[in-house]
Length: 133
Image (cartoon, rainbow, N blue to C red; front, top):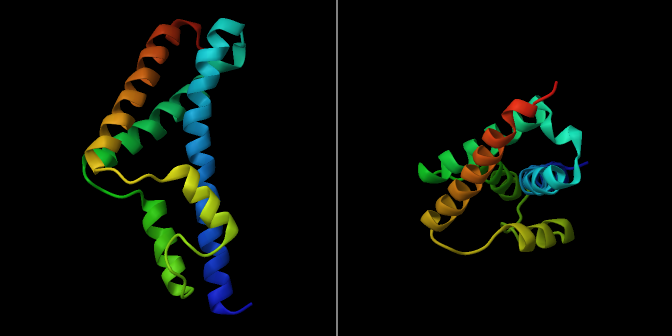
């Protein structure tokens, strides 16, 4: 495997990881909301709720600090090392980016992430007496 192929593969792996984290944050909140009304006991798991809160908290904080996600920076670096244009080469890269990235000022994303984090916190506060290990 050449260096370019390795870096392209690594960039795609980072992008997939980034998408999985996004899915965990969004899907986790949907599961909590649906699970509260459907009686799903697993949504009260402390580890799940804490990791969910920590991940969205980190995302919101870095947005307010004006920082790009470390995974985005790392992926772009790997694509550059592979000799690729950023975000327009592979099938996986193209479609995941279409789903994940939009053009807007950073403050818009910071506000969205903050509201999302506040909803996660609010639901966590509502459910903290129901927490299970």
